[in-house]
Length: 137
Image (cartoon, rainbow, N blue to C red; front, top):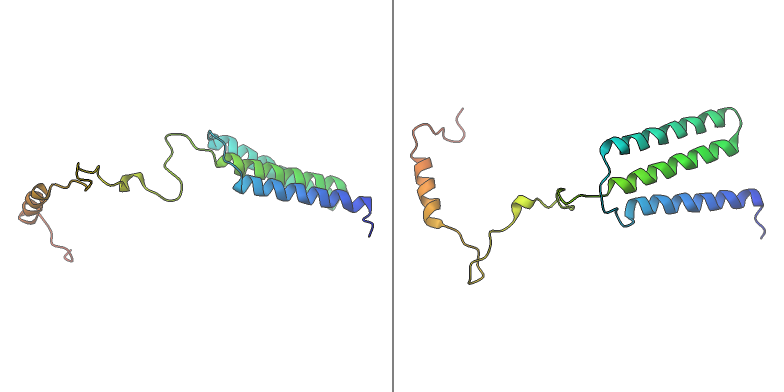
């Protein structure tokens, strides 16, 4: 089976674009984050390339349209990859909230909790006159 040369470049382009999308989504994330304004510029450039591809398609320039669409997809994949970078100040990925950390363990390995202070604070709260009971408005 012989594949015409006009089809070979299309297959190669499709393979390259698929690889770019996969690398953008699941490749190793960059070490540093990119400012949101730069990411927005990349996405706007990709949309402009899609527009150029659309105009080229309407005017019958299919090769130019394919290249413009491919460039737009490549720029979007780059923006996706760059958006995955993180700084030391960013919260951890995976939905973990840093405020949910357990208190440090005591020498015996169990977390310390001051039950006496909890009881005192609870009693003062429950006996305060300006407290509104739950369920009443």
